[in-house]
Image 1: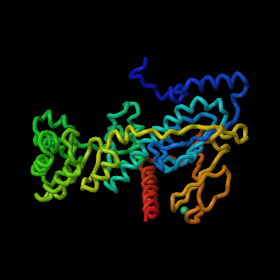
Image 2 (image 1 turned 135 degrees about the vertical axis):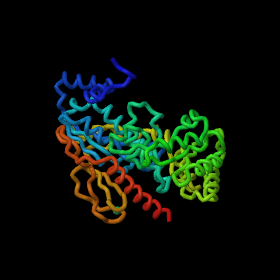
Image 3 (image 1 turned 30 degrees about the horizontal axis):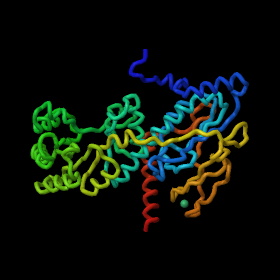
Image 4 (image 1 turned 180 degrees about the vertical axis):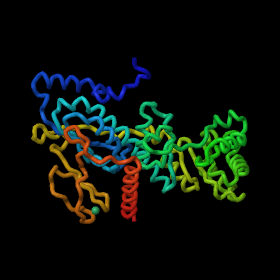
Length: 396
Ligand SMILES: [Zn+2]
C-alpha cells in the first residue's frame, strides 16, 4: 500500500519514476535490436531561472547513487560548481536502452537541487557575510525535505531548521515558535522556560513580536535574560510591517541605549535576496529564509544526445559531440571545447585552464571521492567570492 502518494527510493532506483515515453522507447529499442546502441547524452541548461547569469550545480551525489550498478559512465562538473547557461554540467555514456528510463529522475534530481542551491547562494551574497538559515522545510512536501535542506546549505546557507540534518553531520538550528509564547500566555514566561529547559549550547534567541511592539518586547527580553540573551528574532507579520529596515534600526537603537550591544537581531518572514540586502545594511545580524530558497525556481536542464556509436550527432539547435568544460582557477572564466582538446589558456588572464568534467561513475561503479556537505559549501563560497571580485573589478 502506498502512503502519502510518495514513491519509495526502490522505485526511483528501479527506474519507475520515468516519463512513459522512455519506457516505450526502451521496449521499441529492445524489440528492434537497438537496446545496446551506445550513446553519449549531455545535460545542459539553455536558460537559467529569472535570466540569472550563473547557477550552482547540486544533486550530483544523488545522480551518482542512481546510476551505480548500471553499465554506464557518468561525467559531471564537481557538485557546487558555478556554471553559466549552455555549459554542459554532466554527461551519461553507455547503452541507451540501459539508461533512457532514468532521464526523468536524473533531471529531477539536478533541476530542483540546483535551483535551491542557486537561490541560497544569491541570498548568501546579498547578506554580505552575515549568517543565513534555511527555514523553508514547511514549504515543500516532507518527502524531499532533506534534499532541499542539503542543497540550501551547499548553496551557502549557514544551517537549516530540519531535525534530520543531523544525518548529514550538521546541527539543526532554530529559535522558538509563536506557539510556545501563546501556550504560556506571556512572553516572559516562555523565554524564561526556554532558558530553564534548553541545554546551554542552544543559543537564547527570543521571539519578540507576539503581543507588543518589537522594540518593547526586545527590551523586555534583554532585561529578563541579560547577558544570556544571544539574539532577538523579528518575524513581524506583513500586516504590521511598514519598513522592516526602520524596525531593525529602532530595535538596535533601543537595545544599544540600554547597554545590550551584545544582543543580535535575527529577522525572518517572507525574505528574499533584495530584502536581505536592505536589512543587512540596516543592521540585522542574521536571516531565516523560507520559500525563496526552498521553493526556488528549478534550473531547467535538458538531456541531449550528442553522440551515437561514436558519431557526433544532435538535434537542431544543439552542438553535437562530447565536450569538456575548462575553468580558469583564478578568474572564473569557463570554456567549452570538444572532449579530449588540450588545455586552453584563459582568455582573461592567460593561465592554463583545467578540465572540470570529471568521471564520477565508471561502468556502474562510483569512483569520485566523496565530499561532505560542508566541503561542497566551502567550494561554492570560494567561487562566489571570486565571482564578486570579478564583477566589482568590471564595474569599476
Ligand atoms: Zn583567468
